[in-house]
Every structure is written in C-alpha cells, then in structure tokens.
Amino acid sequence: MARPTIGDFRGTEQNKPRPPPPQEPEDKAPLKKEEEGPKEENLEKEGALGDLDFLTPAERYRERLKILKIEIKEAESVYDAVLSKGYYEEYVRLRGNRRAVFRTRAYEDHLRLQTILEMQKPQLAISQDELITRYNLAASLFEWDGKPLKHETDEDFDALLKLLRKLPGPIFSVLSRELSKFDAKVMAIFDEGADENF
Image (cartoon, rainbow, N blue to C red):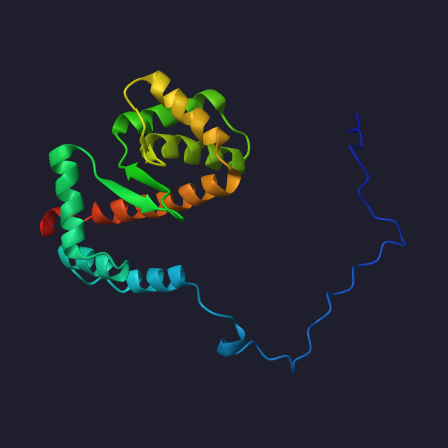
C-alpha cells in the first residue's frame, strides 16, 4: 500500500530567487568620534568603574565613592546612622520653602511591595515601574511641605498612597527623581567594601 502524500512543497515556475540586498557605496566612511555625539555622564562613570577590577574591595569602594562624588565622612555618617538608629534620613529642598524628608526603607517595605506586585501582576513594564516608584516613595517620604507623615500602621501607608495620588504630576516626578538619587547614594554607601572601610 502506497503512503499518502502529505504535501507538495514545490514552488511554481514563476517563483524566482530574491535579489540580493542593495550594498552601501564603498566611499561612505564610518563616523568619526567627533560626529558620534557627546558621551553621557553615566557612561563615563560606568567606564571608570570598570577600571577598578584590579583593586581590593576596600580600595574599589573608596574609588567608587570618589567617582560618585560622595565624601568618605558622609558615607561613614550614613552607615553609622543606619546601624545606630535603624535608618538614615535626608532633606530634599524644592523651590521656595517646600521640602521633603526621605528615609531609608525597612525590609517590611520591601515585603509590602513584593506582595502588591504579586497581587496586581501589572502586565506592562510602565505599570510595574509606576507601582514600584509609588510604593517606594510612600515608604520613604517622612515629611512633606513641613508636615511629618506617619508610618505606623497600614492605614497610615494607605493615607500616604492617597496623598501621592493627589499630588500634581510634575511634583510627583520631581520627588521620584530625587528619591532615585537618594536610593543610588545609599546603595553605593552600602556596596561591597563598606565593611572594610568602616
């Protein structure tokens, strides 16, 4: 018994091979360095950080702080504040008398954020980023416009989320940007090599 034909995959006679893609003219030279555009500051920092591989962790730590323009005494005071009080806080001045106080977050804040991410499961990256920013900002904001903000109960945290939702969009963006700088500084201070220096 002959096997049935599953499919006939032969092309038609009019089916011709595709032409090769057009080639660029040979006289087109690659861009020179001055035509490439200015280097970003963070790329320079990354390059500088990449040159530290041959140093000890303690030396690498000090060099990283220099590159990020963080004085060793300031790093030591931040480190000591977290060890002695359990947190470090910093004033952020906006235009005029407006100011905010940011405080380092507790592990409990991380767990709360993780729980809400698992519950809401945001589908878009932009939605996930916004949720993370909002929860981190609510957890870190301990004073706004001269008024201390409570962080003792879940109701206090919900009130903070409501406060952030009512802020003008540009103010929320400024606070988010300042919190990002604050977090980057704290992470750099508690990076590998901190124990050897303090």
